[in-house]
Image 1: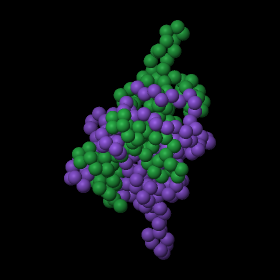
Image 2: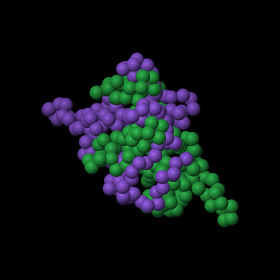
Image 3: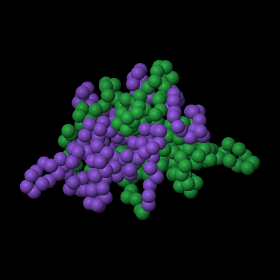
Image 4: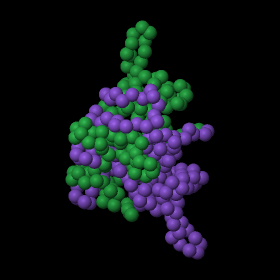
Length: 157
Length: 157
């Protein structure tokens, strides 16, 4: 089934969605952030077919989120390393994880993150770049939207 | 094509991925956060078929992220309002938008957010709940993972 492309949309959410392609992709990225680099290890962790995994890894390489690097010469063997762009996606996954911990984990968070900078268990908090306060929908307005459908209004609730 | 379910995974990223189902879902949520509530307005904004839109909205209602509320009695007309759980997803979308602005918007961010709390244009920054510093992958360790595949190691790069 051909998927609608969001790439041309004047919205970074839509563009990011288009790049990721499907929901296996964030899970591949998650595993890469856990330190997984090799095809067989991704396969074992995710349990998806080699064919699909190969496509997803290839897409992430094409998009510059993973780099395919030879780690052995004879025979040549490759591993997939996060690029700066891929590593920078950690914040999105951490925010997604924190939301999931709040709303989808009735038995408590299955995984805990530890922040080595401060030495404490940590939860991702999405904050304002200017004042540092948590960013809540009710306190945010869209200041500018170009070439968006006219039907979009800017009311918030 | 039947989709693999991630719901049972001991990982809030996987659970959240499972809940969202496909990439139209975050775009429906994005529109809901822009203030869209009515079926026809979602349809006009997203340009997806009424059938698919109806499924996505229904899924978000089932998952408790949107509430279907009658706003008119004769004839009965419904609108879709964000719940607390849905509204709380704003942070994830804001983090996704900020990442897309950094890596997928060579002409600059197409949309600017304004933080009414501090009165400045804002960008989402994902920070540590304890020390408030930005959360970077290199400074985070997984402190605990239960029932995860044994192949997952905890190296970071």
